[in-house]
Image 1 (cartoon, helix red, strand yellow):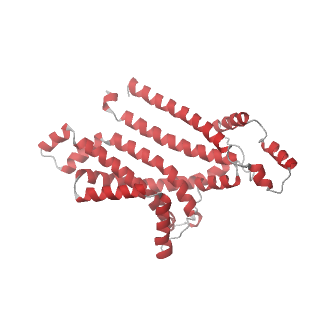
Image 2 (tube, helix red, strand yellow; image 1 turned 45 degrees about the horizontal axis):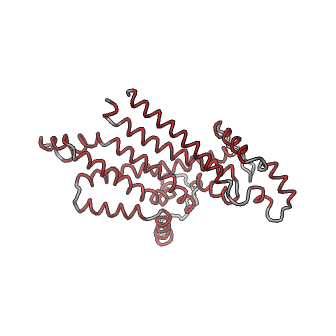
Image 3 (cartoon, one colour; image 1 turned 90 degrees about the horizontal axis):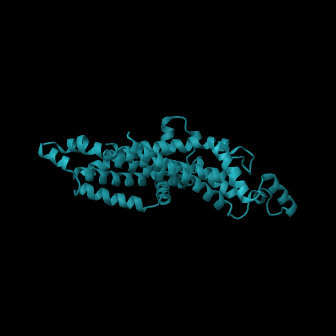
Length: 317
């Protein structure tokens, strides 16, 4: 790693930190524009003005907005997101009780989608223009065009209602064996992978085809190298950077799909926790969950940028 690569990586990290700070401003002030507040939600419509003012003072809702922002930002920097306004439980405790479930779902989706997408993309690039390549492109475009909630609804109607193979709700606390875990994660993973595989396969195909058009691959072909050797030995190592970039960007899209999938299948993750917080106007919990999703998205995009910088031989040499 030379000075140029190191400088570019530091610039990307600094830009990511600046972006995260701007996102914190947007998240905090946008959530405070929501109608109602936690005090009104807790006391109900029959509350008096005096009781509302007293509860708002107790919860700190009577402070100026910028003062509350700096208090909240300082707590987030030290890992203290505050206390839930609805049930009085520390937000970090609520998040850590749900975060492993969301990470487990993301891990299952990654383990399934990445190998399948790479295999489909590489084979499609090797036989570009064939019937297989055309059908894969058509299916990929269709999969990307269909929203996750429609795929999840169709999966529930087929596998849960019509066939009765799987449950319509994903209760992970009831999964004690590997077979039960497969039944719990089958439909959420299928829903998320349908879009991710299509995106990553198309990007992988484009990256491999770009390398197959290079002069060194043509020289390997003239020397009698087989198509598999050309792809695996010559084209694929030089396409690792764009492929890693495509995988990181596609997995960042996973964070948005998780919100839809968890709400449809009632999966006990961070997304359902955030949706429940929105319904109860629990602003600190909403802000903490939103910042967690934004942080994960920025990390994936940052990893994509760094992988592209590191894998570029013109920057390394």
